[in-house]
Image 1: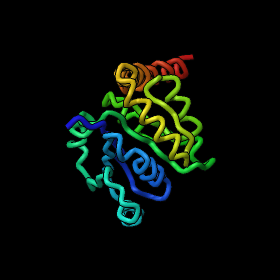
Image 2: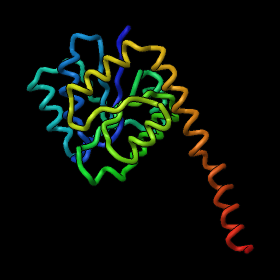
Image 3: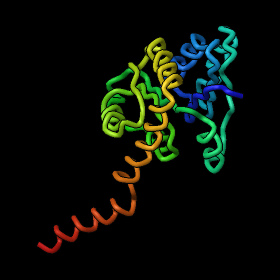
Length: 185
């Protein structure tokens, strides 16, 4: 079908702000947008109950999926969400899914302050929304849905950023060079 697919892949836990995704999904029910939630965790039952209680029809819980299978879902999705609770604890956090999404050329909708936001801005691989602000999240999703050219640019910029700045071979050579300089002084 011709649906815009928004993906979340990760823990359905206390730190993640999955409720924000659910309430944004409710706002966007009539916009031909589907939300795929991959993963499990301590809040899974509670989140499924919210979907049932609020009668949210455009959210699918897919459960846990093997890492090897994730590329299929990355390819299917138009963008990926990274939501964390609005807390100072997460300002220094850089979720690994930021790099997973970039590597998979998946534009990012980030709801995390601090270091993760700085990387997103530097990479130009997505858009930011204020953590806990489900209305702003819904607006950002509509923005990406209606800006296909920008979505495509974000896809390639994310991949380029990861290859340039987080390539293990390059990083290993830099560390080796720095260690060599330290020990050969």
